[in-house]
Length: 147
Image (cartoon, rainbow, N blue to C red; front, top):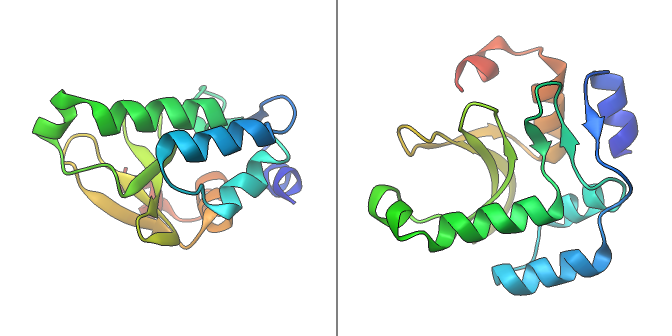
C-alpha cells in the first residue's frame, strides 16, 4: 500500500532499500522506551524510509528516527531552549529545520510539525496516510505555507 500510495502521488521520491528490519524496530522500542506507532512499523515493513528530491526525509529510516529522537530527548542544550520532546516521535523532516512527529505519550495517530524557531507544535495531518497525501499531493497550499 505505501509504495503504491507514494508512487501515485509523486515520481520524485526516493524509497530506501528494502524493508526496515523487524529486529531494528524491536530494539528501537526498547531504546526509546515506548512502542513505535503501528502505522510507522507497517510503513517500515515495506521500505526503510522515503526522501524527497532534495534529500529531506519524508519518512526517515528506523535508525535515523532512533538517533534523532535520542539526541533531542537527551540534549541539555535543547532542554534549556525547548519544551520537552519526550511525548513526540520525530519521523520526518521538512528540509528547512522543522520536523514531523507523532505524539506517542499518549499515543495518537495525528501528525504534528515542530517549528525549530518558535518551538511550536502544530497539527498537520490526521495520520501517516493523510500526511503523505498532503505533503506529496501538494493540493493544500496553506499546509505548505505553514512550514
